[in-house]
Amino acid sequence: MISQNTLQEYFTVINGQLQNGVIPFWLERSWDNEYGGFLTNFDADGQLMPNTEKYLNTQARLVWWFSTLSRRYPERSEFIELARKGADFMIQYFWDNDYEGWYWKVERDGTLIDDGKVLYGQVFAIYALSEFILAAQEERSSALANRTFDLLQIHCADTRYGGYYENLERDWTVAQGGFFAGDRKGLDSHMHTMEAFTVLYAATKQEIHRRKLAEVVDVIVDHMLDPHSGSGRNQFDLAFNPIPAISIHRTWNAEREGESPEIPIDTTSYGHNIELAWLLTRAIEVASIDNKAYHQVRYRLVEHAYTHGVDWEFGGIYRDGIASGDAIILEKEFWQNAEALVGFLDAYEVYGEKRFFEAFENIWQFVDKHMINHAVGEWRTLLTREGQPIDDKIGNPWKVAYHSGRSLLECATRLEHLSEMAG
Image 1 (spheres, rainbow, N blue to C red):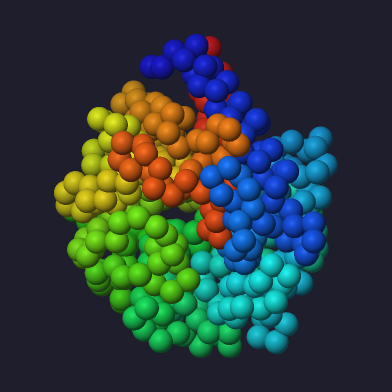
Image 2: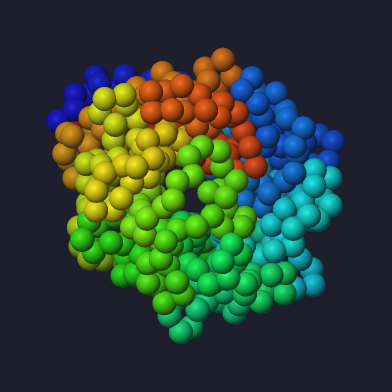
């Protein structure tokens, strides 16, 4: 077992990075005093960049972030105030009063750019508003979270094969195929649907929300994991047959920097695997789902990431690999490393295997040395395998405090609990 002193030392360092880095970075910079909503695009020095478009997913993620901080630190009123103002901006500029649901993207001043209805965005709106409900008990947000959930069941649920259509037009018609992905389903969107329904059920305690949460858990476990390796697959046709992954409109993969090789059919994301494992743990707890039924599933996800994803030479976790083999994209990206910290610490907590804590240590040392820009307090976006910056910007339309801040918050909470247990 890991000693109490070691656990306390990691808690002190990680909690310090949370309190003195990520929290003040977004608290001081993110609110747009001119137009409202959150600014997300910051260069390597933490300076605002010219591109100030506002995406639904990151506006929602910062509403979630400040709501979460308000619940954790209720004595600090600035957190709930920012969450409320962020929710106000979302509702004013992203909610579609004609067809309902949430638009994808607006200009800095709220002028509509992209009116598409993207499952990924809809569920992050649910996620944000549900967390805000838990923090503030606001009826308007509760009504909109519930209505968005209902809209997904009406327009996005695939009643033939299960799961959800992911890319739709403003009027909720399914988008065309190929790059617009009306003919595809992905693990990423369904995992975040599970995540959003978990918080929604925690906020509402409505049985339909619990049932749909349990349903999406089973869709992921039954259809989206490789039966041989236990790792997550990437993209599927509507009937959940695995198909080669392609860049898709309105996704991080289509807009990110870095390597873009021809991707084989059985690629897996180590970040998604490890994130899925700990989010499954959370979903099972909240929904009172039988833990035994998913115990081995979660273990295999962690085991695959441990065996194939951790870079034991230079530190950190790789981006992507082959489900049946080793890593093929050796870059180190912020979000996979953030989720790996939580996932391996969660695995140590659940399974008690020291090697999972050692993986956590390996990744933290890489993140602390190379990924965190200590001068401003946030994380760089993308590094080489050895830790040299490829994209050193620390905020973009997809990157806010959701991964980095949540990782530090979750790790600090777990380390504090583990330290108490070891005492």
